[in-house]
Amino acid sequence: MHSKTALVIAILLSLALGSVATVSQAKALRRWKPTSSGAINATDYVSIQDAVDSLPSTGGTVFIPAGLYIISSPIKLPSNVVLTGEGFDTVLKLADGANHHVIQNMNPGKWIDNNIVVTNMQIDGNGESQTGPANGIFLYEAPNSRIEGVWAHSFPRKYLFGIQVSAAIHVMFCPNTTIRYNTIGDNRYSGIFVSFSDNNAISDNYIYNSHRGIYLRNSDNALVKKNTIINSDEGIRTYFDASYNRINGNYIEGSSEEGIIITHPECKENFIAHNTLVNNTIHIDDQGTDSEIRRNKLIYK
Image 1 (cartoon, rainbow, N blue to C red):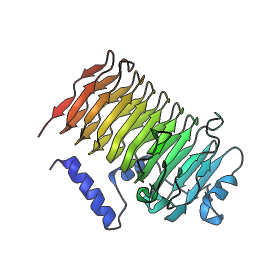
Image 2: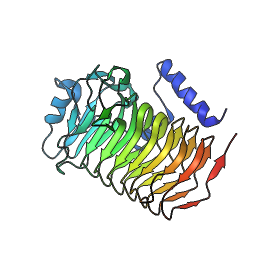
Image 3: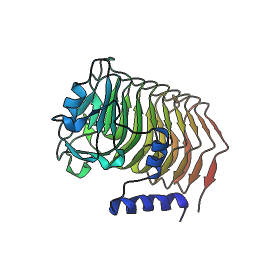
């Protein structure tokens, strides 16, 4: 068994035994040192939302200590707010039948919010108990944000007006956003869904058992680097007019469809290099225009 597959098994075993430390969390903690210094403690308030609402207009940090928090309405974050937990022992679990996002920006669709940070927590989509679409983190027109060191899992595959919309992390019209060092798995649709968002960095994420690992839709100039994607239907997908993206140094194994797919001629000049693809049904399917594909390792065992 390949070492990457063995790592997935080790993660699942550790979770079954009650341990929540993972490789991605360890990476996150090396780069982000969680602290409640200068932050307000969410448990001092009636709800996490009340803690957020108590911050000044200039923003601030809300610290959520370890524990299980059932989320029955979305946590809404305005500009310049950091929402941080105490590692993966801080669990935000979507309530049965909630059918909404766990975390979103305060003013979606208005280009008001920016510079939102979500880090150091576990987000459980409770997918089997949802009857409608739900995202773990949904940022809509909230540029310059960062999602880091989050374990997001178990989101459903549901439809809204015939469109599949559920993802563990979904950013839409959010340029210059960073998504890194997250662990994402067991999602019926997308792990990371980036739509209509340019100049984003998606790196060092560990994604397993999701329909689409990383999905770029109408998004340009992304850096998709050093992600590990295991046992998804599609590893990395660029869709309709997703152009000038750099897909570099990723490890993709066991995709039942494509490891990397460029779906349309409107996808122009994407750079795909130095990726390792192992035992995918199709390693690379390029239907784009002027793609540059070189020095990838294509392995069947």
